[in-house]
Length: 475
Image 1: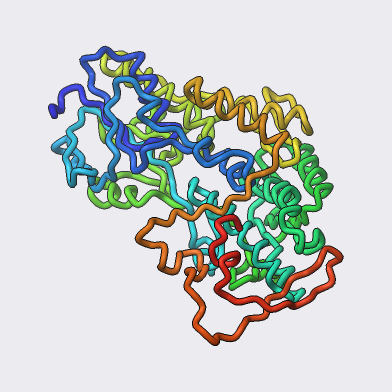
Image 2: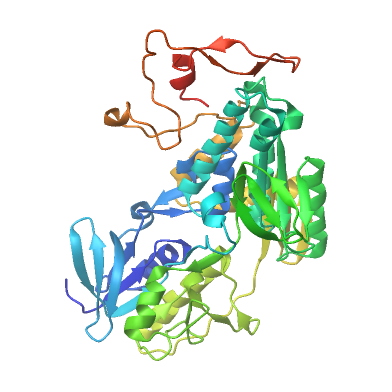
């Protein structure tokens, strides 16, 4: 692979894929475009909460990168190092370690979830950063309700039915709303679980939800969520996480068997490699750039998206680490790169935010668009319209629209997906359910607790190896 005219992009998120699409339109075919990404798809992170609440299926919030690109070569791999002097990078691919030469190199690889922000978070809390996280949380919800039907201790049942969300930003508000809707929708499939045994609590360390939006919208979100029965604990900071417990800064302990954390990011591990091997300038884990998004002191290197610290000439402040700004940076950089190749002067990044919006569940939302604030059903419809338009390819737009429409008329999906292969069927699955094995002759029965429809507990006998318990694929 020749290095001449090679433009390599590291990262397959909003920034990387948007840049590749824009360069395909601006550059002649004599320039070779290459995109390298750990994953073969782009995740629409703002829609992960809908996967948690089964409003959409996981495949509806991811888009294969190959479907988004026309002539850009896509390589699924992990970049290990960059040799700036020789103009090449080393990358672990499906075919082993490969070297990719470059003439221009763009860093657009984003950030990772920070599981060390609060003591105990990595061990006892669930992040929401990837589509796998969303599906895991949804499975956890189904498992907790299924277990509640088998438990008789009222304290344990309430702990299992308590779902705690930490963080009152966009992700936290949206996942709390989806959880509340999901629990309300699926409870009828678990008749031995009472409504008062289920609860969703949102913890936020400041006095306002959605601090990126005007205070009036933060208060509107709080009203809507409180009306849905979500417990809001504003001005509350989590000190540490323990098993089934969140310890607050004031010493209070909140019991809940499922804790979802939507706060905290950390730099991609590649940043540390670039700092060490290239002496790359960074600030708080973000790559320092010039106003035109070129990397300081290193011609031919560029950085955009969450991994970069990009000044916004329109506001004289750093760009926000959001998809909106990542897309705007990618489009501007495409023009800067095309101009640079034609010996034209590049332009500094300048962008005025169009606004922001959040879905808060039960066909309610809050939004600020071009300075106009509104909430309720119109904001919820605007949120869905926005992401429907952003979804690439007509086929995916139609699939998403059809799923949203059908979900208004049919029951919410309660499938507990376990990707078990035939060779693993007799092994203990990672989610902790015992494998199905025949009961030994003479083995004693185990008491399991159930409730009749009046809520009065009773304790019939059942064998632990009964197929209806161990072979259930729908929690």
